Length: 176
Image 1 (cartoon, rainbow, N blue to C red):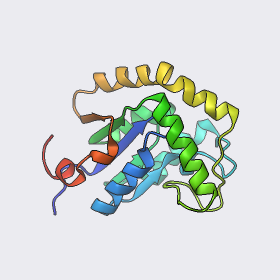
Image 2 (tube, one colour):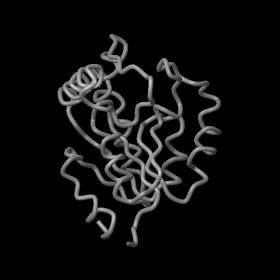
Image 3 (cartoon, one colour):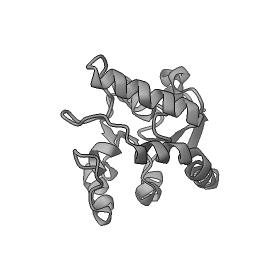
Image 4 (cartoon, one colour):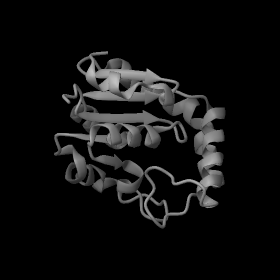
């Protein structure tokens, strides 16, 4: 099967469904999946040294011909956009993000569900700092993200409010 897109990045707020969509695309295509949380954060959720992020991304996936990358991390966004041939932005409400985050955390911590994109042994946590980050993301970061996406002229950009309903086969095998 010939795929139109080989290098895909998925953007959106926390709890929007980035990792789940990345997993679906990776399963369909066989492309390697790169979860930026696993690449750029330590096992305790603290950030690795920001000055090393670009080098880490270069080693992990920016030098590869195929891949699915989920995560925002604006300090390495331009390089990922340059690398990608398809950019998907998941645009959901803050309420939906919070519901998804709390549901995911509960299900993962009870052992009823596996979190896509989370390293083994990492505990899924929701603290006040993270809660505040999610509350403010749509107000501040989403506007910046849309501004960046609107400036992209030479890549396919898709905005969806329902990643579950994206038809992966159609998306990857037909020009949108």
